[in-house]
Image (tube, rainbow over all chains, first blue to last red; front, top):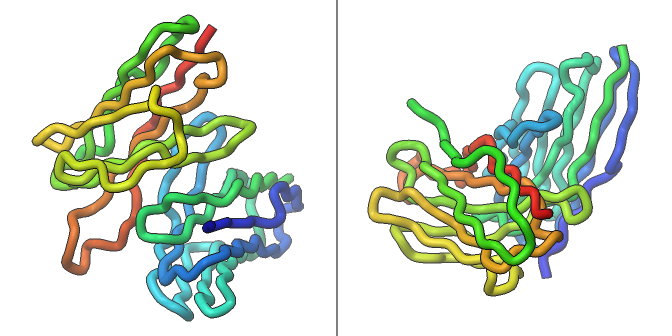
Length: 108
Length: 117
């Protein structure tokens, strides 16, 4: 059974700090996706990681994928308030199973 | 290019009623997936349709059903509504099969928020 674990589930941090969100999954998957959800809104795609060792960066966010370790990370550099949101990871092409989401609050 | 459109955006039903939600995918997208999001259970996959065929199905009772039309528009139906069906129902479409554009990335609609009283 495919399981996806994100940690932490909740993160409150100050602006300017760095932090990493982890996404572990239990079965083989060559792809992984990160999405962002703002309160009361839908999900939007952040990163598409298509192979082992893939690294993508967008602004203060950087995502990586290690398919051998079944681990993806989402690193936040010098956080700003606008990054406050819930972040979801989902392995597999058909995204059948999702992580529970990491609710990120960044305080000014 | 228009995004994924879901209707209605909000609706209130009572227990025992049924509801139909509609989703129009991005033009050219043939895959449509449906998800249920609740505070307690998180984001759960309902089903996925591709070219009018259900390709994958999540672990939901038979009260939840869906279909896809030849123009890729999709509907989902929930019959005999229960209080626990109150949720945000999200539809997502993805790019065509094959080719470099097929990354599996999902494009979500704004969702239909269902309240069951």
